[in-house]
Image (cartoon, rainbow, N blue to C red; front, side, top):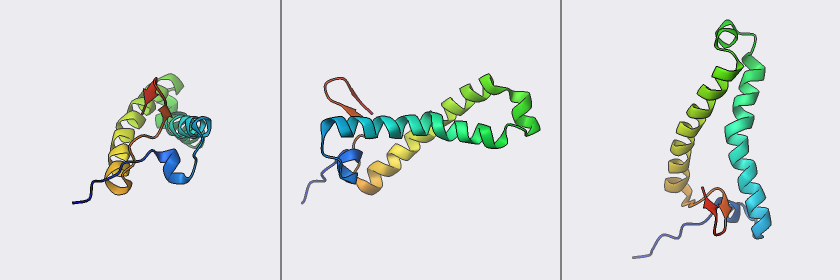
Length: 95
């Protein structure tokens, strides 16, 4: 039997420095939680549903949805590519 080796996402894409890995992970996480919902808001803000919902309620709903979808995405990354963590800040935080 060969044990599976789980690696971090920055290491998977070729980033070897600790600072580079932290920045890459932070960009990935913030892009997932902020940039994607922000782009959808800019694209659909004139739609009647989004006008009725408002920016504050949309932000809350989008954040909760992106966290929920992030768990699914993390499961897919773990099962498909053996990715252990996306954001690695040594001795403080791993996501």
